[in-house]
Picture 1 (tube, helix red, strand yellow):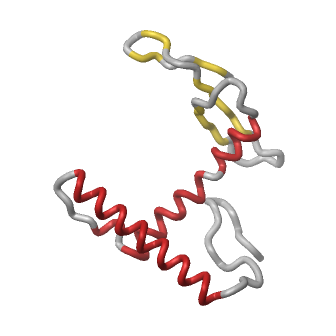
Picture 2 (cartoon, one colour):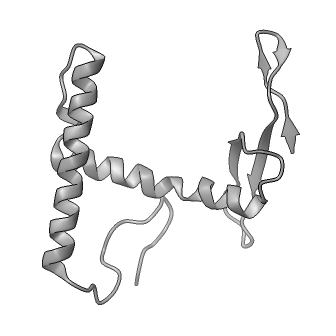
Picture 3 (cartoon, one colour):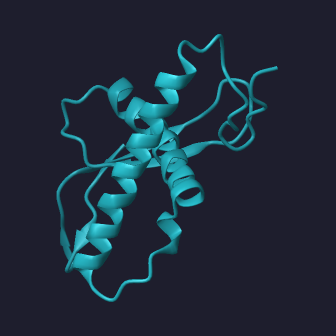
Length: 119
């Protein structure tokens, strides 16, 4: 459903309200998108539901390499800490993949909320 949010009392650019209803009951998911009018709904939903993977990366980054330990006073310091954390996370991920080799299957990484994971 298209809508125009108000910006300073005037209608802004077109946005889309997307409601994803699961087939077998469950909780409805709501998304707001600023995609162009010609973008297919499937592409918008793919991006919307892939957000969990990004959140999971930030959670791992905070827990494993100390992204949550920064104590900075200005933007430049914060930016440097984020870059250092991202490079460290990339190094650890690539080293882990090299040492692990081919995975035989899915490991025990927690799924999205309400997901039971691999049995």
